Amino acid sequence: MIKTFKSKALAELYETGSSSKTDKKLFKRIIVRLDRLNVAEKPEEMNLPGFNFHALIGFHPIRYTVHINGPWCITFEFDSCNAYRVDLEQYH
Image (cartoon, rainbow, N blue to C red; front, side, top):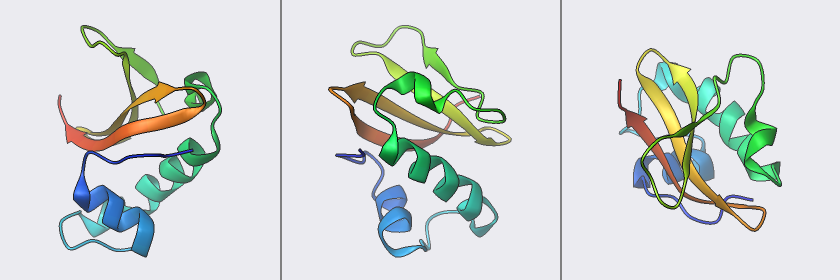
């Protein structure tokens, strides 16, 4: 279950279905991934085709990422069956 968001825009999109601070072209792909993350009980459950799931190196606690489109990814931490500090990042 998603417990906390790092990005206010991402939280707004997930809670209301829209956000003026997020590209509308990405909405559907973001929501699909957030819906999946919300029911995941362990990070490996995000390892689905097209998600390009992997752990990011150099972070403690471990941060994971799933691909959205182009350079956009959702990153998150996972602990005790919950996702924390969920963020939308352009990091490539």
